[in-house]
Length: 172
Ligand code: AMP
Image 1 (cartoon, rainbow, N blue to C red):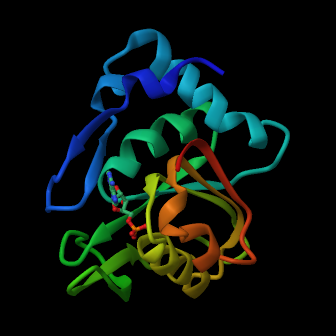
Image 2 (image 1 turned 180 degrees about the vertical axis):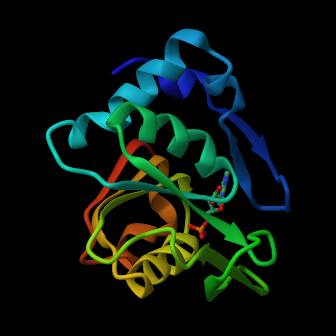
């Protein structure tokens, strides 16, 4: 495995005290490692039929678009409330001290389409859980959920039991 972790910058206490933020921008900036990261993320699905990659607002988009290109799949996006112009389905989810709403266009996924969901970081799992609900509302079939980074100590994987989760880099 290439040393992807060497290009993940850790910012303590950002954006809030107690959060150790994983900044992926140095990895995105690396012309060698960026393409190798996308190749690794694509690897489990090279021999599978994938109709859509679902990318989560906002850093998830940076991975989802390249992954969709690599797998010759379509790209569907999950956005924070109020950003999508056409008819949407929505799902409220809890954050540390508040709640927020995620939305997808109601035609983003056709019934029965096989989708892979991707985001940069799995923390508590709340964001991806809401995304799973949106995909299910649109009757998509989730064949995989991927993250570049998993913060195992926040036990997001446990909150997503029953789902097939792949993460490239784990932090304990
Ligand atoms: P969660 O819903 O708790 O799993 O949080 C996941 C979402 O928050 C992802 O979209 C991440 O981009 C972001 N996130 C949460 N914790 C971190 C962290 N320590 N570093 C970078 N991004 C994070």
